[in-house]
Amino acid sequence: MATLVPPSARHPQGLIPSGQLWLPRASLSACLRGAMVRSTLGHTLSDEQRINRFPATPLCSLSWWFEGRSEALLSERPDTMPGLSSPREAYPGRWVLTGPHTRPSTSYCADPTHAMMVMFMPDALHQLTGLEPEALTDRIVDAQTVLPRDWIAMCEAVQHQPDDAARMDCLEAFLEPRWQACRPAQALQVQRYADWAMHLAQRAAVSAPGRSLRQLERRIKRWAGLPLRELRGFGKAEQAFFDTIASDAAKGTVKWADVAAGAGFSDQSHLCRVTRRITGYAPQALYDGIYGDEAFWAYRIWV
Image 1 (cartoon, rainbow, N blue to C red):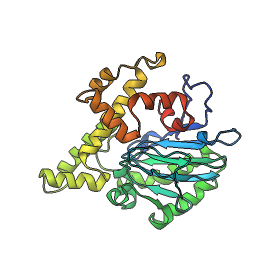
Image 2: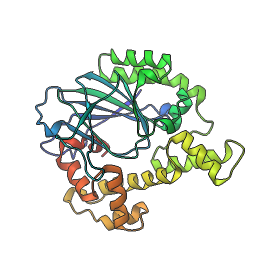
Image 3: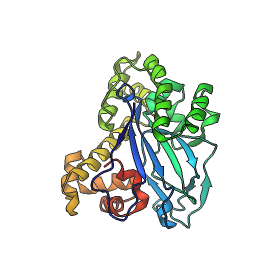
């Protein structure tokens, strides 16, 4: 059974506890990274608080809306994050499948909304469905146009469950036998990005004839949708994120040079460049957003 992660004792004052993180049962930990659920039903939000900020990610995701709907906010310039005045684009289809994203993304919910985003390891989604993560990279598609028929029936079943716990049970009951039938013999259980990237490289080296660097890179990109160099970058960024939370962050005294060194960056400037590329914000601005801006709820629930 999936586990609901309890809310952090350090949840910022003045922000609604509307986001929840569900972790998969142990047998699916190499398949699912988790599920983020967001419900603003019963809460009064300003227009600014209806914005949702998400980082770039090597994960694929499948999303449901049980109440309300979201729209994508589009950046008009590559060096700025979109806001309320930015162009909007409706998400395609009833259920949405996204591939790995090399850029941060932003959405907006005009009405009270209850939605769930299930995050798949891209190589696991490939094993389960035959879909190529590389073909989904930086794309958002109507799930009904690409997923197998039994997956669409599962999406329908999840849609009609009475609560989030039942939805996760329904999803996991569907995935469990399919994942056990196709999972790699040496599936990784710990899903920190750095460990996963190393594990993919090791699998690529022994999974098929041809072990040149170019062949290994092609194999990894086919499984994960992104080259190994980018996956390692996500690993460093994730380490920096958790190091920041584990530091003296409660007192607002994060030492970014120490965080950069601990996560394997060459220096603080390198950390700033990577953080801005993945999240759209410099480290201090991201930290301030996590602890003071409703739009960063997705970051907060990982804390």
